[in-house]
Image (cartoon, rainbow, N blue to C red):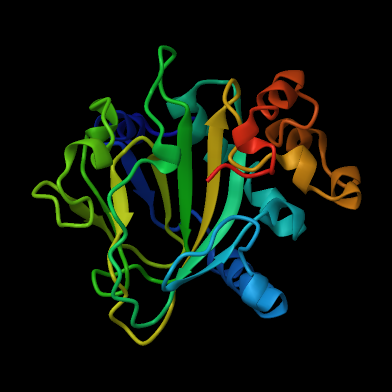
Length: 259
């Protein structure tokens, strides 16, 4: 089923769209429990494949760590929104988790993911953020500046202080199970978590097929993981795409990760 036209219009004009109840309560619980198991088992190394972030717990390379995450990344209803933004040729760029610690007073600067600007063929990054806890103004809600995906500019280049409140910024709040689909060229960031509980999210991040993955999956996925993939999962991971292999030769991604 195609997404409603009003949803696509909002993605086009505003740059993001919140979908309450997109992830059912049982799946939301399963995701949260599995992530907590991984945080526990990986300990201080959690997220070390990617990068640490002050005041947050991170996990990376989740496509390799549980079939559940691989199932989520190929949901037809999710991919329909991603393809609306990026076009038909898409691939997973990364599949990570981010948990803002209780009491973290750090404001995440406004940014575009991967510092990406649209190119001559249009948009090339699109993210989905899966709310695993209720998002409120007090626990680290997403902030964004509507329409800035159309600006052709990065906030770091034009704002005196990307950490400061923007006069046009809006907040995304919602109940656990809400999924935020976002044109990742949109200026966005996060607020401090002033509560006594973590604020947890899963990030399933996509790129247009003619750009490198943030995390080069062929290098990162174990052999046993690759052997268990469905044809659609292999396609979304770009494991059999010669162009993706060529793109991965860029020195910036030889380590397996773009920052």
